[in-house]
Length: 280
Image (cartoon, rainbow, N blue to C red; front, side, top):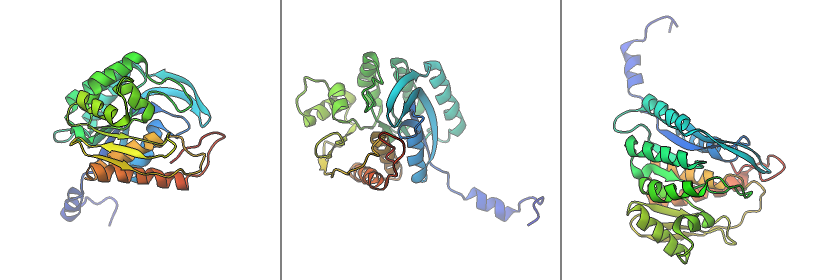
């Protein structure tokens, strides 16, 4: 067909019949080594056929050898970014098909995300929070005030939260004994619509624990994989979980599929850098 010719009705109808592409938003920090944070989320989204857009919450100076510095983005910049993206992709009742929330960096940014979710109209069950509180190298990534705002305000707006064992203790409270009791306490605080997956990569036996919003509890057994490419496992898991939920999986299937995705990434990861390389 002549490149200058106007498209005929048949070609126009074919374009109109194309399905709308799913769009996921990640709200997280920027890792220049691309093992975790925004860039890891976008890689996982792309692998699942999901188009990803991103709002950066913090800039970091880090590599596979650890985090050297964290500079949170100003709250007004994060708010403007979210509003700009939402206005651009808005269709129907909501702006995005799903949201993944990672490191927020400051109490101000947690409050910005709370305000955004309250106005966005995104189904709660398609909002996944990976509560990044401390880096694997030990750097604090959210101050105590930010943790309190997350616990009291943000949890009630998300449908999923994926803490590791240490993050679970912080969010549920040290006085609550035992994993199951801590998970139940988080559910009580956040309302009945919260699903919790406690990731067990830091445990001797890397088993994950799921408690669904309906109260169903299940363990997903894991095996230790010998690799140095372990950076970003939490980010990759939560992003894969969101993709499975967007594809229509139920809670158990989504959690199982996300764990399988991480396991495959660990088994096939190609080492990068001098430290703990990216899992995906």
